[in-house]
Length: 150
Image (tube, rainbow, N blue to C red; front, side, top):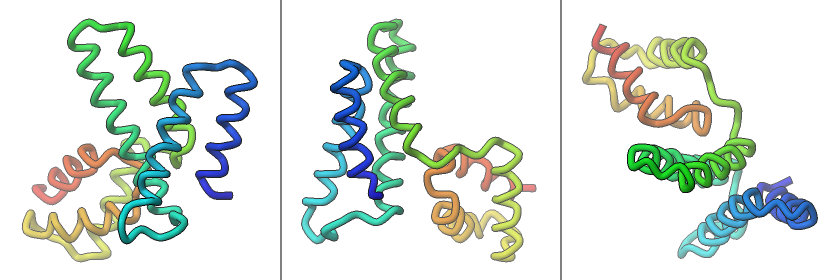
C-alpha cells in the first residue's frame, strides 16, 4: 500500500478519534505528497524512495523547528512540533542506533575502497542511498568524515 493511501486512512481514523494533533501532522504529510506528485516532471505515483525523502524532509523540518522553539523557551510551540515529529517518524523506517550506523558506514567504506578524506563524496553518495530514511544526514556526514580521517 502506498504512503498516500496509508496517510488517507490515518486521517480518517484521526478525524473519528478527534485527535487534532495527529490530524494536523497527517495533513501536512499529505500536502507534501500532493505537492511532490504535481511538480513538473514528477511521476504520477511516487516510489518508495521518494516517499521516504518526503518524510525525512518533514521530520528534519520538525526537528529544526523544535530546536529553535526550545532555544527560545516556547514550550507550547515545541510541544506541537514534538507531537508532529512523532507522527512522521512512525511512517519512516526504524532509525539506526550509533553502533548499527557505524557498522553500516564501515562496510560501505570497505566496499568502495575509500582510504582518505578525498573519498568522502563517494562514501556519502552510497551511504545516502543505502541508509535513506534510517539516519539523519548531518549525523551520517559527521560519522563518514570521522571514519575517513582515522
